[in-house]
Length: 258
Image 1 (cartoon, rainbow, N blue to C red):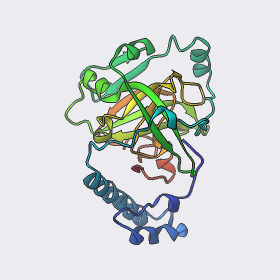
Image 2: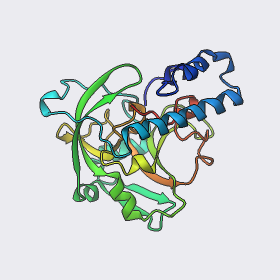
Image 3: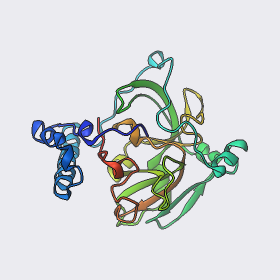
């Protein structure tokens, strides 16, 4: 959830190196389907190489309380511009519910109180934004894996989609509504949590109240804020641009591993 940057800024080479970066200079070919296919293939190889080198369960670095940044910039939306969100905020999110559905055997809803009753995880990690800044913060929330296990995903489930309250563009087809997604490897990673607290306090609106995703091995735009609805899917084909996220539909990489 951050300002738009061109595709070339995201072609991080990994083991693919200069061969991938060479494609990034071809802005005139941005809309070419063959080029897009090559870029998506390169991204997939980068993801697989990174996971092979690091291991699927390797933890992102965690820090001590003394390392927490004195200021932590708000990334992306400052506050969702919707009457529904305004009403929920005014009531202290007492009426807010997290919906979980899609390819599950047990569709579920959770209030904030429900989530706080579940086992929690607290972690102090660094947030890396594609705009070039970083900050260290403490996050507390419910491990996403617990929610997915409770909902009993179906065997064809492949991705977890996070539908959010904010709209970054007003469009007739609904594609301005913010959404993000991760695969099941990242969904069940021990540091992937649905955070409701930051630095020991309830999330502020700027930082995603009442609930945001923390997926610590990926860049900041993957950390969806204002999460309202989790949908389990087998593909992105029915989701707006079909790339798995608001910014991905506009040229960002789907896998933003660090």
